[in-house]
Length: 197
Length: 119
Image (tube, rainbow over all chains, first blue to last red; front, side, top):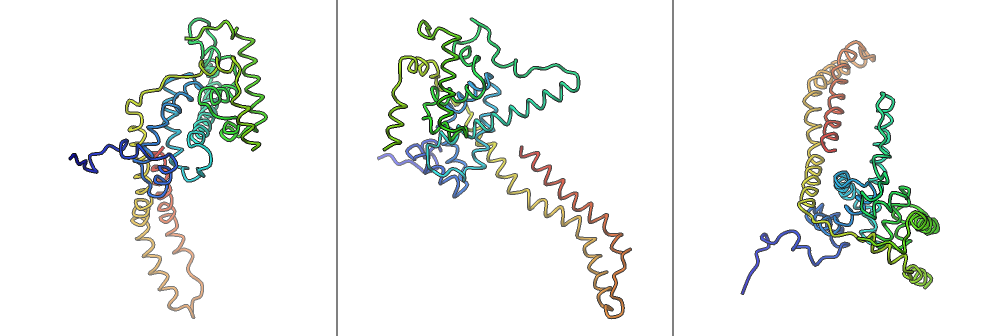
């Protein structure tokens, strides 16, 4: 008979069968960072992917993802348990992204005032046909808000209602943003003949 | 019921939706120590928060203890003959004020440094 010592079990294996809600409750009630670590392990890929799509920069996105999880830890008690945890995390990630965007915009303004010319907006998502992956070319024609909503909808599989909660945009507006985004992609690229890879 | 209908309507996708979905679909990103790094950062923050208040209190107390004792002794001296002298000599308090102010500022500085370290 094989017996497994409790302290030899890795944190991941220890919480593998627990639900997100249970882990959140554990993390909040006993400040259990190991339980929260399991939540990070489960959702890091989706959050990092989401932020990579939004920012267009892998390293910056990973830094943002760390900040996002740190913010999530700090306000974990505000997660009510209603709705999916990933939906709530994406909301935190989106807020973190917007905050960093505002900071870098302010930074660019200061540099501009000091005489440096730096266009941070153009640094990201400048359309360069045939040089960047297809999805990035698609995303380049969208505004920041449209990008976030489209990625949440098609990339993360969130419902319109969940996107509405995550972005603080009314459901009707979410629908029209998706419609507009699709329209833009359709007019910029020939979707039907498009071969993705 | 209405919510169910709305969700069902959302699920009805045309070819374009399916194409977009497959385009937006991305590969799983390998953890590669990301979770451990983040948890370590969170643990550090937790410790800094736990230590911040006690350390600030100790530093503040160390700075403020001497002037506070002096003030106390002056206070007792002043209060003892309260019947005769109701007014506390302002000059004595005024002399201690800069030290108290520095103590307060030091506490604020320590707190700010911890906050900075935390971020």
